[in-house]
Amino acid sequence: MGIERNATAPRLSNPKTTREVIARYDFDFRKRFGQNFLIDDSIIRRSLEAAQVSKQDVIFEIGPGIGTLTQYLSEAAHQVVSIEIDKKLIPILEETLQGYDNVSIINEDVLKVDLTALAAKYQAGRTVQTAFTLKIVANLPYYITTPILMNLFRKNVPAQSITVMVQKEVADRMCAKPGSKDYGSLSVAVQYYSAPRIVELVPPSSFMPQPKVTSAIVTMNLYEEPPVKAQDEVLFDAIVRAAFEQRRKTLVNALSSGAAVPFGKEQVTQVLSLLGLSPSIRGEKLSISDFVQLSDRLSEMKHTQSLL
Image 1 (cartoon, rainbow, N blue to C red):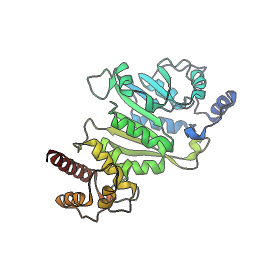
Image 2: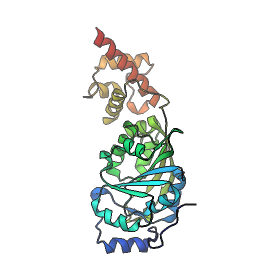
Image 3: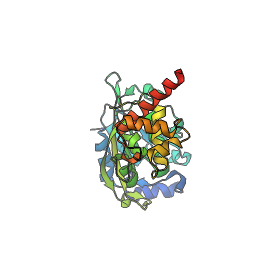
Image 4: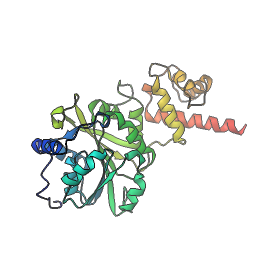
């Protein structure tokens, strides 16, 4: 099922076709954009399965590259909006997506795009009140993964799910549990807003050019409301960041020296005691629920002090 594919736009998952397109446009891969294009049909199909793309979906695709995954998304979804920062890729996309009439291309930094307004334009969201379901699909380079995800979370973009291709080490951090070496601020943020899971590992041979590391497909089903919600999410974020900026420090020392956390050692120690936590505990041992309770108690303390 899907729209009829234009025969003049061959599958880009064919390595030969990808090489021809790149050569024809004399395209230079740009390191600063972390460009590695998919050439593995089975991995592309697995990405679509992970995102559960259907004709009821509007897809926001971040980083379409030359349009390899976009072609498949177009055939499976109602509408695809592809956001690409590199202006040199736009003429290539206009060629490779010729005939894919349900694809719109935006040449912009996704961090500067009002995705909530864009969702409204396409009548897409995460609830039954909208005509279509919004899903986000992205191939994210290492350097920009965290800023993009945090932007999506904090601005409450009304998507039902986010499916990303990231480096395996980033995927491990996204899904890590308290007490593990990979557990950190990214783990807390991702799991505060969503239920993530690693769907499949992707070898370097699935890309052109080949990266030096293994990648992974991760899907995140977004919560309508976090299961445990902080009263002051700005303070919650600041506490989590401070807790992991200097992992080897105790939580008391990390928070009391954090510029964005306005509490001293005595106050942090007092709240930890109220929560039944040791003053020598490190941030990596706290669950998301622990961080929320810590944030809420400190927020209440701050409010009480402001009334005195």
